[in-house]
Amino acid sequence: MECRSGCGACCIAPSISGPLPGRPQGKPAGEACPHLLADMRCALFGHPERPAVCGRFKPAADVCGNGRDEALWLIGELESATS
Image 1 (cartoon, rainbow, N blue to C red):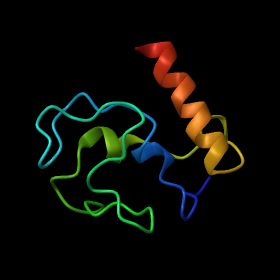
Image 2: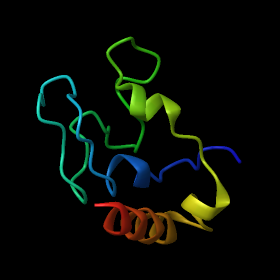
Image 3: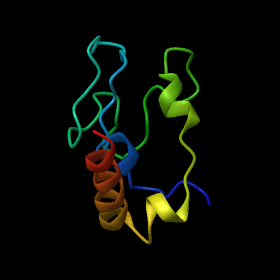
Image 4: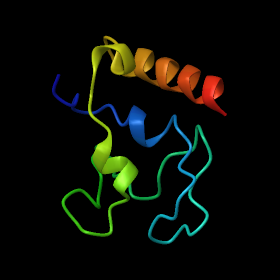
């Protein structure tokens, strides 16, 4: 599966417990990453300071669903189940 243009759910729904550039404590679930651009692309993509957890995420139907709303819900459910 390819990353869906204009989605950004993986940059919003999950928490990131490790440091991000400018956010040494990470980010809480449901809050957009400060590096998420208005067009829902990552400003750190391809840069060495991009967190490893972000680089390891691979789009998949069981996580991304059929659209952005479903992806936000699915990733949110996974976040709740693992927190």
